[in-house]
Length: 255
Image 1 (cartoon, one colour):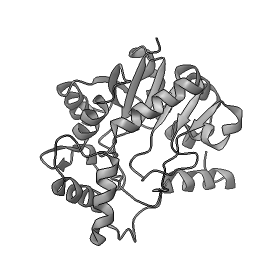
Image 2: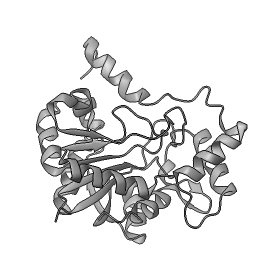
Image 3: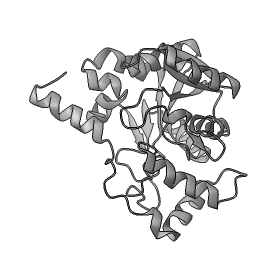
Image 4: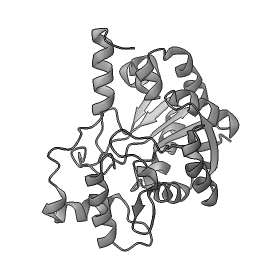
């Protein structure tokens, strides 16, 4: 049996929203929402938080342990190496990549993606090639063999920060599978990148019953029913940081 391990990348440092992973969201830190939701997925054998070796991230590690997650600590900027280390330390055969800015992550989608990867024997499966789910529901599942290959092939700095960027730029070089939503929901922003995002997610969770945690359908239905949630003007676009770094590298300004 393949051992499926969810690895949640999380750290205190954040350019736009420092310490957002510890920000209060309806009575508990945002990271706890991510851990608890991912832990509900039936296909996972473990949930791990991959944070950094910086002293400020002691709080992240302590919180993860308190809520039953494993912990790996590694590089601040070389997030890919952090994932490789976490996969090795926690005996993963398949890594499910989750980011800590996704407090509404749906465990049903995690299960669907893990099963899709297994049934297609893909190196990499995601719902991002192209995205059809709301931003904040992005998920990836890849074999540790694929992760180790990326570790060798990803030589640019922004590829290592964004973990799977090289693969997503060259999907034809890998066996890939893409999970597609019945409706294109990619224009909905439910990630938490800036304080205004947290307010939007807080409003949704306050309005919906807390148990069981509202799934994608319930969240989208409420989002679409409240016009005040839908103004996303002035907010960062999807993958804005990655695209800026890529464009600089292509111009030769930075590696």
